[in-house]
Image (cartoon, rainbow, N blue to C red):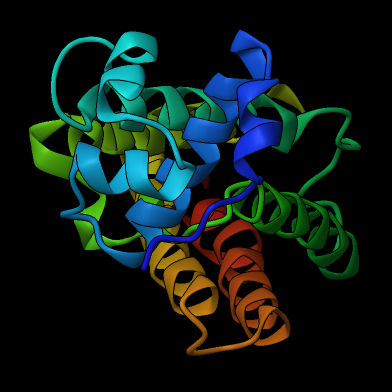
Length: 208
């Protein structure tokens, strides 16, 4: 039986922005449980009609809802590198300290959505195109890290490819964490180890 977030009398008093947010929250829960969920499932979860969901998210199917959720999620990506201190490769200890900042921000970013579906194989919901958009987002983050001035990296296709490969590994770790297979602490420890090695050893070898 579908869960309803608010009593009927409360939902009837919601403003349009609140009703839209209610639908998005319900959609996130549905996608987390079953990437193949339907618009009817989302409507039932939100306690509204299917027609109302379509009114707020026109275009047919679950794609429009999923893409709005994805847009809200990826707009936070630039925050990952905001105000980081310089010298990512100054000393091993400084490198690890800066990597810990990046990783923690990345995990906070991942935790901003209540479901793990964005990080898993079911993210291309009903042909929504999110799978391709996620790949493009990962490539953009790799380019952002590669060209971030304080890091002093050799911004080349090879550098971006190596960073992208680590981002894909991080994606697997995050999905395992968000689906309950590992703890956040274990996810963080593994990610810090991988990215410290990336910045302290692998990328300098490519640059020098």
